[in-house]
Length: 175
Length: 318
Image (cartoon, rainbow over all chains, first blue to last red; front, side):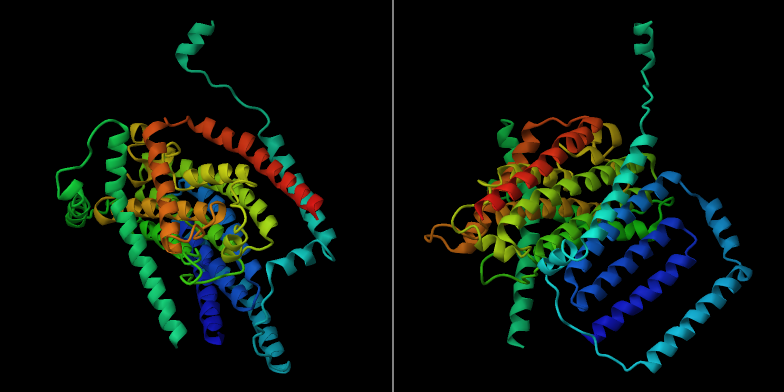
């Protein structure tokens, strides 16, 4: 299982790096899907099968499909790839590079100072997740529900007016 | 080690049986459609025209496999494989009998939903990579349709999960020993079937590939075996949805003892496959806005109502 964990982690890291460096937006999104799937595998290995399933259904299966959907409609051509490649100039790497380096140093420091723990393989059944969500974490669930409700109301507000388009023949008939 | 060998044999068996069923469905569908429409269908090659499957396969393998110059090569090649992979992965969790069960996940049902939601990528990427307006239109339709109907598909199954108290498909089949779930969950069965047709984009919900308006939509540019993979993927999808309907609502392998359990499972599945073909033979295609409003304005409230009523009855029974 440890080997599977490291393979999934490696895939996640590589695919996430590819997300940042791809010039074509759809290719970047596909790597993002792969990254999410490998994170789902990691969740599964760590015993959180329910979270893994939700990661696939919600993130990889629904949210990313909508992302791809929108990017497809934008019809980005070679011009946008060129623009992306200009944004990826070496000068743009300095700031994020320094910040990431600090984070990596911190991560390595924590890894070496804390006692190493082996991967826990205690499985958490869906029932336990449900009991936890609707028990001690009920407030969080309710808050998330309110947030989603606000989103739905916002979307409804934006799409409230419907333009009526009539065929030119129908226009004549109505006049 | 013995366990591993057994699992590999079962997995290979499922793979071979499912691929054979999907391939022979080409013949079954054409023959059944023809009979329902008062024609003969393919009856020339071999006994009852059975060798038509072989002839079709030979033809599709030797066709020129052309990738358009304007297409996005890599994505174009990958797209048809996704549908086959996701559908075949879903077959792993179906309990064919108590013995022939590959994996009994405690999130089995969620695994099926996850795989079916990943299947959308096949159509979406295929249409996008073709770089063709008709394909793009078909893809937009497919994405919107499949993402919408996934919602009701998931919700319609939650009634079963509530009754069984488990996401595991083996537990769900075992819970149907007294009464099959299509009786207490008749609304869930109806919604799941409709969502299943939309998810496999079969007629009457095949708007993504409406040949009269979109020149077969997302797979306009595909030829040869790449088109064949979309085609076989669709038949595999039908088999999967039929198998899931049987597992979830019609007692899976359960049945009177005069036939072995696996035969019961296959028989029931075949009935639903024929039902899918009958739908194609008899129903016209709705308009796209009718499809969407039917989903969101009728099926969504209905599935929520089903959920509430099931929960209330379960609480009352306690």
